[in-house]
Length: 302
Ligand code: PAF
Image (cartoon, rainbow, N blue to C red):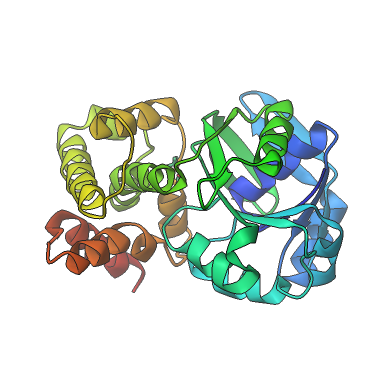
């Protein structure tokens, strides 16, 4: 299977390195030509505990590189999905799939509008990775990855991709309930990302601080109520325990939003807490905890 991964951030580098180490033909796609050149030359460096490995990964800013791929995985920030997909729109093969494996909501809808609904897969991952420098990451904790057709159908291409990811050591299952899956990931991001970004703490520290943990609980329970108002079935779960479990497993990870705030970059808050607030409004409901978290994080980078 030949795969293109769009976005050389922490998660893009992690997936590219693991797939390439397992023998999959993988290309990283960037939009910055100079950075792509440097990454191709220096490779992707992955630190795991005391171990440090360099993986030679072909990286390109030429949209045409995706034309040879069986599938394209989008791993850019949610606010860049439309621009990245538009650049590649004419180059993705007619029989190829495209998959969002991003934080935040609304990415699949953008991919469907640009590539056509029948091409779109979606997935989530709770792997923890931190970008230490360009093309240099720390794999801070293994997590679970789940993928499926956006329309919920069963397909050979999803089973094949799942096998490829598992073969690369990325623990992957398939699902027929992608909407529930994306909301479940949203609950995790709602509970962990703003709190860690605002307090500048690692994921695990939320569990050690009573007040931080209180915020996590209020934000997650509020978002879960909105998921139910949306008619989403996030599965038979205790939402707070779900988020606590991820915080525990990725305890040493610096969340993506914390990394963004620390680097002075734009955050994905509008696609996480902001999405919950907008979804609540559609049903005549309010989501004051998520609204306040949205405003606090937005104020950090305004
Ligand atoms: O955004 C992140 O950092 C990740 O989605 C997660 C799972 C919260 C772990 O840090």
